[in-house]
Length: 186
Image (cartoon, rainbow, N blue to C red):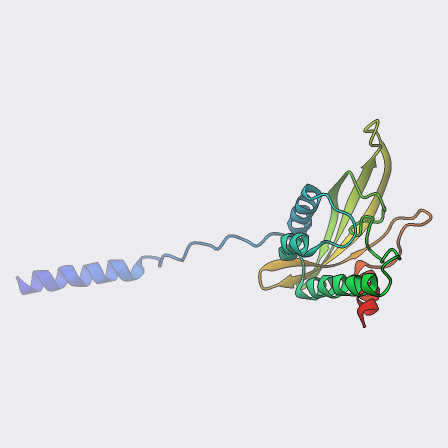
């Protein structure tokens, strides 16, 4: 009887050792760079505001941004407040207008147009459209570029490059404008 039991046990161990191990359930993939920008656009366009976001608005947008960009927003808001305190009758910088696109009035809609990603950085071109508020007809289209870095939680927006080509459109990057406003508090 022991021989039968030992043979059975040996056969069972052989069968089990040949069975493939179960691998853990795959983690859900982090959003792609394009997905991150699309999610930001939805969040931003759902909150209608112009100029620098206040603390509450910034908290809503913060999960989309890199730590560097979040710090620049905090510093720029402090610089803006310092400017208001020093010059109460002047209009401080970044108090109005859309800071997340090249058009002062902001975009009616935006969508991801192209993504170029490497291991640690990505460039996402967004196609913006501005519709006439009265007719709803598109009167301005343009691209802007979102620059992303890979963080612990996936892709994060680190900057925006303004690409509008008309007179009076901002030039350069959002981070530069934020740094200039932050310096007002020094």
